[in-house]
Length: 231
Image (cartoon, rainbow, N blue to C red; front, side, top):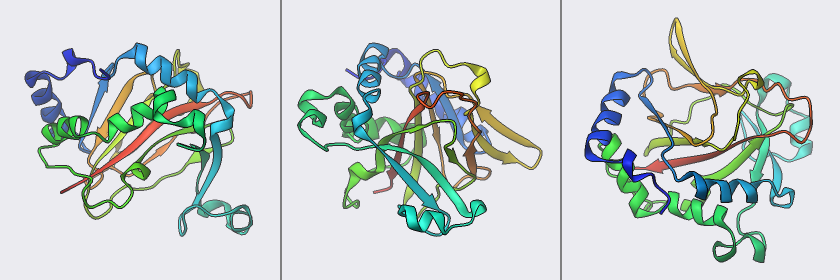
């Protein structure tokens, strides 16, 4: 229902794996992987402001409050963005909300099996206490940022970024940039229905989000971030 099945044939999956292994870092970009009519339903939900709250991380601590944030030096501030509050009320449950349905699909056996074939490694949520915390929507406005970092963690095998920005303007910035090799960083524009999958332990996978060039405070860059773990 969610997938564009023409892009997940055996030949396509083999090609994705070949691309993944030949890149530094090990990554692959797949455009139009998901059904766009279904994603349009998701993006309509994401435009509703009541489901979002600000999230702040420093390099030394996650989920800091405003007092901690103000006491942190600017060069130690790692993330400032909004996170989607899943399941916060009756309007934000699976039976009423395509955005919630999509998050559930991204943690389904069907989708993990697909990723397992691309990365040639078994993936499972069996060892995660709260698997849903590893998949969610995020948005950034002009003053927000995600600075340079690595996603590597014991047992974490796959990172996914899916962009939900219809008619994205190239001048807006907001590219995902991998450090890559010493003289060749890699920037990827956050185009609608573009998926980036990468191995967080691979060489050159350190990454950040380029600054956004938004004039209005109601402009956002939307994405899904999802992490997957070994069995």
